[in-house]
Image 1 (cartoon, rainbow, N blue to C red):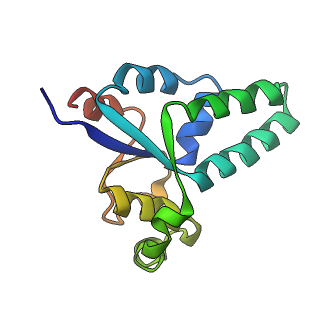
Image 2 (tube, helix red, strand yellow):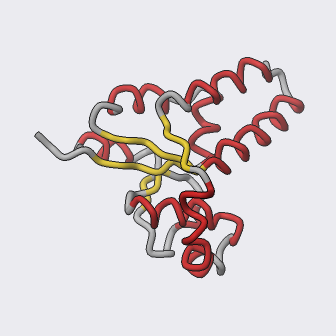
Length: 142
């Protein structure tokens, strides 16, 4: 039997799930062998972005936020107190791209787990990343 794996999710993956992507299906299929994590700031950011998207279109805000909340049953929240000691190291890695992403880098450093993202700011920073179109390769290898 393979060893349990970890995977960090970026806010854009959480948002994709809320708006109908098959992310939750992948999470549920693999949750027995893969532990999913996301820093709390990603849930906060996703909530803000979902609210903005709902304000612009024909999207049920309450249902969308409920769907985001449901993800916390599968995706473990990593709190700032867990990763804040890594802020300097994480900021140094992401400084030339988007310094506001340091909590995600710090979570990656804390867990030593790859990152599932569509954000190109993480590419080339020495962070192991998976995009949605390839993440199933990682998940199936667990």
